[in-house]
Image 1 (spheres, rainbow, N blue to C red):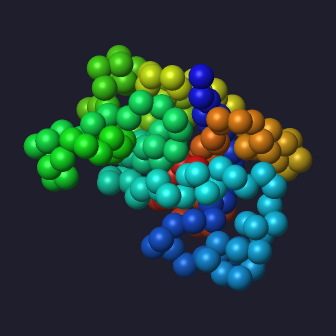
Image 2 (tube, rainbow, N blue to C red):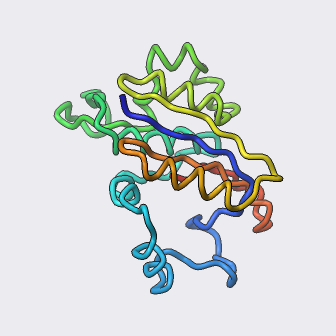
Length: 184
């Protein structure tokens, strides 16, 4: 079984396409950011995930977009595209923000509720587990967690084979709290 570790943490996010990166943060697409990435261990998950990154299609789908990214990176059965879809082909098996919802996920949290409220990390863990061959765990860190304990939990998840980590960032520290999203 493949696993996904979901982590809730109160730390600033480093990525958002519409935001200017504050000077005290390092953009990934800068020489310094690339040096940090290539010097990081473990880093293998980045390369597996990055080819599947998607932008959420609405403000409630941060967990759904993260799930699509992770499920496409995992070696799990993927749904065939609806031949009536804009892709008009069934030969491509790929998770999208439309086809990730199944009869099993509807039992966890209905799509209509996700559209209205989004997903908590607890619900996201169960939502992901509703997909074939996927197990997930939820780890919530309190505001009092030490940086060392947080890093240890993340590194442990990243180092585990067939495991990806989804982190929920609280962006209040960047004064852009309207953008609370998950990050793979």
